[in-house]
Image (cartoon, rainbow, N blue to C red; front, top):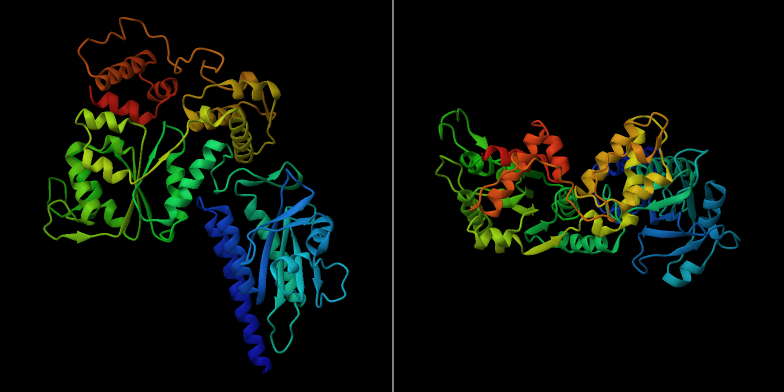
Length: 510
């Protein structure tokens, strides 16, 4: 092979390696399955390094005596464990140094146990520590095996070692932006949840994750159900980015903000002149979501007259723009979410029964924060403390008294309430110490009779006439609370434990 060909091959390799770093970083902007992300990293790394196999080993902070191959190009075994300090991987984790072995035969550092288990034959090894910089604790090890060879050589060289070290540093920095967070200056990583940007390891959430993985494998409609503030939008995005449609658009429609006269146009678009003010053709959300996912948030609030048009689209995948005659098609996966009792809405004639069945092919029940348990509350609180500590440039600690208060609180506003409480406490703590009196918690705790964070409203101002439906009485009460807090819709939403959109909708109905 000529020197020119070798140089071209190395140039192409550098381009491939640069593309790998860019692609891995871009994936982390989404709620991607972290195992899938690391598996992709291992697969692409093996290709970029011209190696037969690549493995990403992570040091679990909860079990720091061993490294676990969370992902690897391993068709024979899904997961391997390597004791800390033993074998090449264990030594790299212990010493924090790059190790390169051109021929493993006779090298005492090589541990052949995994070869015996998998049937793979290791000839050469290159491994580097995963850490943010030379002074940071080791988070894991990235390893490539058996160079395929350029110009007759079958060993990794100095350029390969430099690149792998650079990539392992970038990998550590990327991991620091995920829910695989560092363990407060100690070695290893803390696994806070299998999907990036979604924190939770409780049994209740594990059941949700399993449903998400199953939903991602199919193209059926999904209905997410749960109280407001439980993270249904994040979970919908997790389904999308874990599915074959992940490279397509994820388009959100907030059904609480759609007036009846504009709902159809918002979903399906309109032609110029379709109605007063329609001075140009506008593409609808269905069209924009082509080859991707359409997320219908709070589907229970979709105007009844628009529900029939949505049903037709779900059945036939065809639609017309408002004011148009052309029948159009769209390849769209539909995910919807609601906190409403849709069964009651169907009985009351407010939601179409046929649409109800179309939407809930696969139903995922999202647990409230109180159902996830006190340990989950503490885990989330520490997660948000880290996020807002970085945002406001301060080192944040949560004092034991504050942890006790958080664990005892009922959180009617769920994760959203907890997130806002921690952000408020961080802002009010210039010294970075979150104390009990800095937490703006509603006056409800698990030790008290639940009061749904309601405020004391004078009987006269909260007078609700008899003969109203439950929905009408609820709207009247919301308006009474808004009046009691001097028209502050955000404060009313907080004390009621509902979204601001729910409050705004009740006011519009007046």
